[in-house]
Image (cartoon, rainbow, N blue to C red; front, side, top):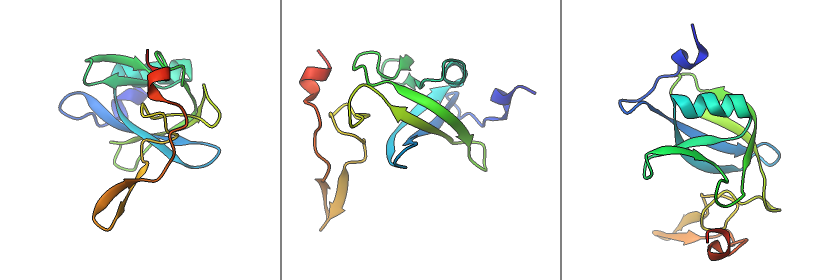
Length: 129
């Protein structure tokens, strides 16, 4: 059996993926992969996602230069979520979010309001031209 066959793909042929920074343990982002993206990620050792908005493969960092090097790929106990242990490249500290922040999970619920608590490390206008 091919290792890709063990993944439980949803009705659209996708699986949710969590990118976690290997050095800090920070959860940087959530995305989707199709079979081709997961295979490419394993082959290249860098994160390749499936962009639902563009309906195509998305090589993380293709526009921003913020590439994710993949050290380890894990599958959860139900075989329906992938965890990537990554190093975020392209900026120090690493930027994973299109808002110019380290992590996409930068807002905290405080008194019933989602409040950004992590700084913008680089202006997104200078990242995406």
